Amino acid sequence: MEEWPDRLSDKLVSNLSRAASAVKKAKNAELITHIDADGITSGAISDITLDRLGIPHKIAFEKKITEETIERVNSSDADLIWISDLGSGYLSEFKRSNIVITDHHVPDPKFRRSQTSIDQFVEIFHLNPHNYGVNGSYEICGAGMTYLLSRTIDPNNIDLAYLGIIGAVGDFQDNRYSQLISYNRIVLDDAVKNGDISVDTDLRFFGRESRPLLQYLQYASDPEILGLTNNRDNCARFYSEMCIPLKDGEDTRVWDDLSPEEKIAVTDALLNKVSEPELRERMYGEVYSLPKFDPHTGLRDSKEFATILNSCGRYDDAETGLRICKGDLSALKDAERNRSDHRRNISLALSYVKENHLVRERRFIQYFDAGSEIRETVVGIVAGMLLNSDSVRHELPMIAFAESDDGVKVSARANRELTDRGLDLSFIMKKASELVGGYGGGHNVAAGATIPEDKKEAFLDIVEDLVSAQLI
Image (cartoon, rainbow, N blue to C red):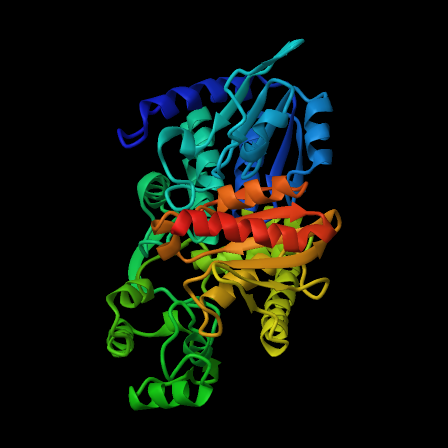
């Protein structure tokens, strides 16, 4: 096997080797993965890996690990269960052996490796960055961990590294430093080496390939540009003063249609509008392109690729995202319908929260209850977008409620300034939900839970106590 770089811990390399042996010995398998971009790319990597090994298998996409999921895992007659971008928070619930988990969420603290019960010995191959002193929120994602195992199984699977990058970008792992770092960088190096990803330094706003120039600035939101964001007329005036044509003949231009000289001029002008160094760093940094895909397909820019996958998973069509990851570009037509629905629903959801003044404040948290008006699969996205807007307080974590089939879905989001001060939403969601009869987990900066319908106020009381304890 080709050696991993020294940047990968010896313990992880050893555990990858053990898990790879278990996968290659399997006679058949069942794959379980999440529905977002990270989950779909994780599932695609594991699916393609087993295809190439000739191991019969089936794949299931799950919004979250439920009691039914746990029962299905424990009772499955499959030789191997491979769970990706899920599972770490429920390790102590799994009662069978030959489970491989490639995840990046905070692990179940009740689990002990090779734990035993009265009548059985359970061996789980648990590959999670937190086990090796690496942060799963921004140093590597679920797809990245899945790729590390796939490449350990067969170095020729280096051609799947780009999917690990799509997963990382889809999980906003490049946002903290405006570039990918740590173990994500190892995956990135493989993708670049194989010619599947190119790395450039550019404006980091969404829509470099898909949004017309006017919309590219009009909808710029991380950070917002004073006088331009949400102001179409000012954006048109800005380009006119810069002598940047919005069209090339009859064709509407996008950001990546600009010449290098035009990009430099516009970038300099935009950076001069932002005085805070931290905001400038968020605006300008690394971007990741996929040169093997045609321009304007939505697949050439990593953020847009990830958004297509997210839109599939959030609207109960993760299989279409899987088809795209496996090279079936005919699936793009179905994905475009999902993407249009996704854009429309996100816009409507944001407007619903703002126009109805749903956000309420407590001393240490802010929250809103969307009821059945916002899909549970997108309420976390809405919470994150609100937190990055000027309509709410940035110094308070955002808690969002939405109805779901098995209770109330809770999504929690915070800015990294709070996590740098010690806020851990994963711990808070897990602890608070358990105290009201639910379950939860995630990352320090973004986490979620499911709780009983009649426990929202009690849940908020507990969350506020836990937030205040961590921040004071």
